[in-house]
Length: 580
Image (cartoon, rainbow, N blue to C red; front, side, top):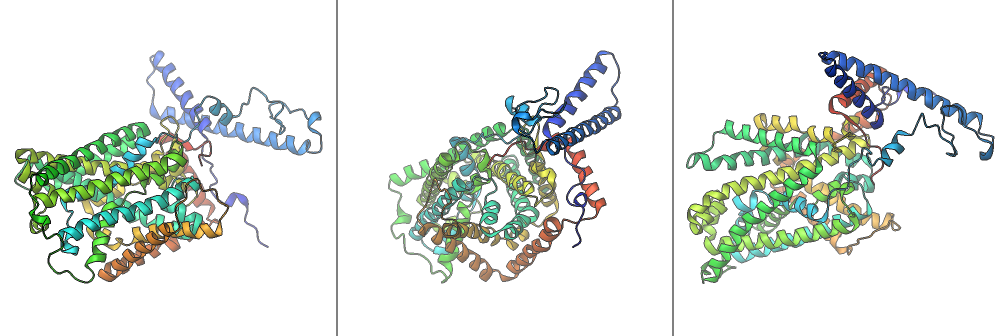
């Protein structure tokens, strides 16, 4: 049978390891310092040429060492361990003797605590901040009227808000079980891959990468730009170009922060989450005080209202579930969570209880001050509420809304970058995306890969049309992930499950997700059909990018060299230890 030569499979030009890249960078810095001491002007091309020569020297040294190691193992395979003596410059396979001239780079890095890996820096408080910070966006402040429009009454609206929070809590607890038994980052992608294989996982990843995540982040950044500028242009509308420029600057700033440090990102998220909670308090506390003074006119006939269509209640649940979406983001960063078996379930439970209570109380406060008709007619409910109750202090509401959008954008960029990192590590995306900065310990390429797409959609894209194409895709894959939990209960009963939910929770939640998908297809079949067609393009992409291994030698050579150039430019390397 015809056999493909091994050198024609995969990347011919191998990536640089972390220890070798650090060695090259250190020698380059030493050369620059020496030249500066002698008053010599360092030319960038000379430095690059020196780096290339050093990299070539390191590769030759590594190849020779591996060859001598292999020769040693073959030559001494028949000897007993006690008779084995390493050849000069080699390390014996028994590990009894080692030459100090050729230490193991990974072992040396581990001894120094400097391995290139994603550190476990997500504590319980930071996990709560990620979940709350990504769920609470601008919706609860600007347009929390989708449920009211489809229920027709104040009482039923409040019941649906609470019920959607409880149903979302069920889904979040299902993800807590998945996150404690499958300790890999990646969220939906990882759980679908574990349960149903790589093809459906790649299709979900494909749609996320090319459309959903860039479009969603572009929409949030535009909301940030609009509301951060609103106080400066009252009563006029903010210029569209200025909004887009501010949105681009905000996105670029968050990309920079996420690239530089996980600690910086987490501290920023903590601050922005506190701003969200303060903003909700500004709405809830005055509203409840107003209600306590006897202003309960809107609650006297709470379940009496206008007639609604028979599809109103399911569509109200659809709007409510969308408002609570985001509880799954902590599962995107499971490998970076400190003590995940404890912190993931706790963070999810605490966050969902806080958000469900806050959302229900915020709507209660709105109804205490405004009539249902006024809420439906308002373009910014929280601003109208503040004008009625707080007077001139209402000017702060747009600022808090902008900070809320900024927090959602920061949490989304932080979490989604780990999905691309894991997918690249599984060889579903280019190899460079699975590499980590040698000193910052952040997945730098995975963080910045979306930046061009987001900026392109900010200036050129019809974002609302794109999101309408894929409004059902999110719930389709979330339902598939939770269905995988039920599936693995029977196919993998011996899997260790530190946290386990009753079986009715994943069944009920997955059915709810599929009902939402059906409602999307029923209410907007044209856009949903276009979204399905675009989603199915992931199947040929999967076979081209992942299954087809016998690519032309020139393609592999170019790909490998591009990877190495990007490694030098970004100073990144593959992770040096398993983190799951």
